[in-house]
Length: 502
Image 1 (cartoon, one colour):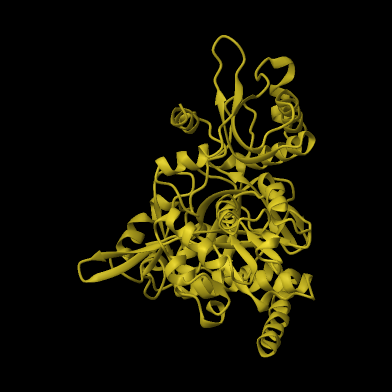
Image 2 (cartoon, one colour):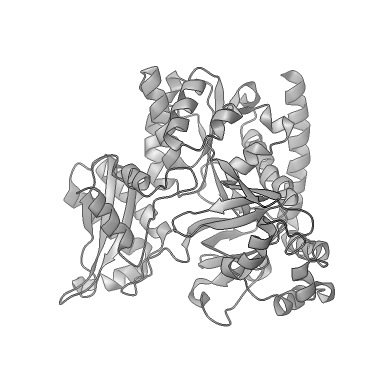
């Protein structure tokens, strides 16, 4: 291990220097990547159609390339899956991240060799680097990283094969040797496609290993950890993996789950590092211990733009580059990547918490919010309000979803379906705290709640334990890439969940 530690130390110092450069010169780094991506793809079909060779600056970039979404790029992506190349990005692309999230329509996001190495693997190195820099006495490299991933499948189109699956599975399947040395469990288990069997096998194979780090979506990681505790017949993970020191988490806001993890770990020394990744790329890493925001990673082969949330869906929205953004404003993210996503509207919304360096929080999704009565409630609002209500009433939440109850002859309201790990001491007090916290966090919600004229107090329904898991299973949505829909302007999810528990 001394040789590995020495090599790792040298690599981390080198990478920290690179991070310091983009922190110091963020606009230069982003402009350099914009021009580099344009140059690399100028001879592709998309590059020729949009005259990439004439683009010399950001204003030309915006003029030449219209904003895109998945539907506008889908024809080229479908052809690439069937073997056509050089359409959106130069070189052969055979891997596609199947993205489902909270929607029912699958997307197949191209994953190039450049994005694997320059984005996803660079992010993996940076996660480890930032943890070790913040924790000089780390023993991370003495054990294994347990990564909770998905699976992939082969698509046969005549004589041509391509592959699709969770981005986590694509990363695991293509890991460089240095990363595979520390990863666990065995790839034959890690890439199993039957989710419940995989959880069982992972727990059985890892419960006697020396695990020093975990990585995965919080909701599903809890399922795995509880299975490990069940097999080992113990109460805390400290008794199973005493050397565990860091949990890398992402996919959903961690706030509603943090108390559960603290209880199940029973170890105050464990470091929690939030990461912001998606099928389309890797965007942010928590670089300061104890902070909720993340450093926006600017040298992963991604050029960023931002649309003010109120302009989303307009024919000619305002679109800003990094040098034009402000703090505490909700922006929809637009990305241009080294896998051929050009001015692609990601669907996520973020807020900048700091501009020097650029740090962000994920505030929600452009399609997942509640604005039935003009209240403009985002996922970040409900996550934070729920956390405060839990802290005040000694409760812990496993999962939740919220939908509007529309007006008839009287005011409307919000219906919350909540599955508690630990129910509040007093449900009415919990509802009062939840409502008060939302008012504090969101002035539009507070205005609509005035005297119950537009919105009444929240309606909270307690669900039996396992309700969300069983509903996800009934919808064929088990797995790390699937998430419980938090907010929706319609009632389809709430009605479906309610029916499933009758």
